[in-house]
Image (cartoon, one colour):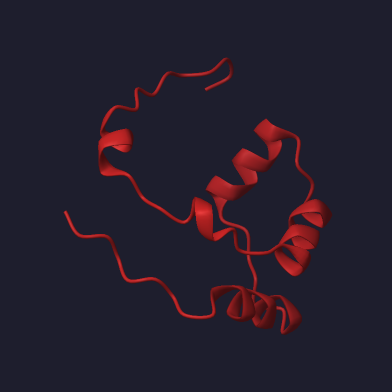
Length: 75
């Protein structure tokens, strides 16, 4: 299985979207924010000030294939 192509200069593109008001939450994102008790200002701060960690930029199909999802309380 082939991984999708990476988006070039992703952080720059994200920050441009934020600066021009073209960033929207999805219903899924709103649900996760609630579950994890993360506020929109916290998310915006991380998107504006975060950085790319190259050492974590690896997709391991074997690892993902071994994931077992379980419902958490409230799901």
